[in-house]
Length: 119
Image 1 (cartoon, helix red, strand yellow):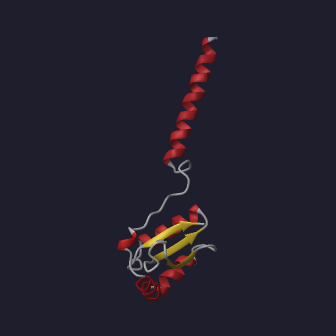
Image 2: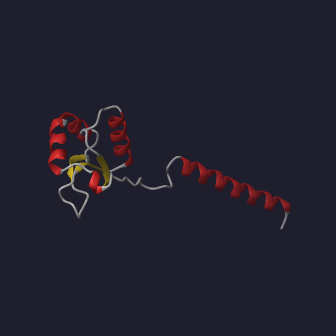
Image 3: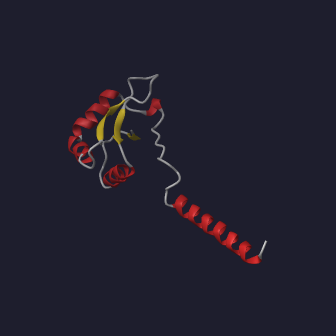
């Protein structure tokens, strides 16, 4: 093999590594984020989550206006304890998620846990 071809191969491998690191740092490779919620025994009751949603109806409407497929509702994420609830925000795209996070970071929230779920 000629020395020039080794240099070209090394350059291409180096370039691919740099592009891979760049993509990883920008979140292009990681896929959709995985959200979690507090343990089920620490969640409020469904009635408390409903009251929080009713008390913060304007915030829920603001969130839903951020994207056509965004929905805010009370969710019951614990199949073994249906008395526990939280605010469930479902969305369609990464840009929806980013907009939701931005709005929530500048608000006081609902007073109960919020769980973001990509459809």
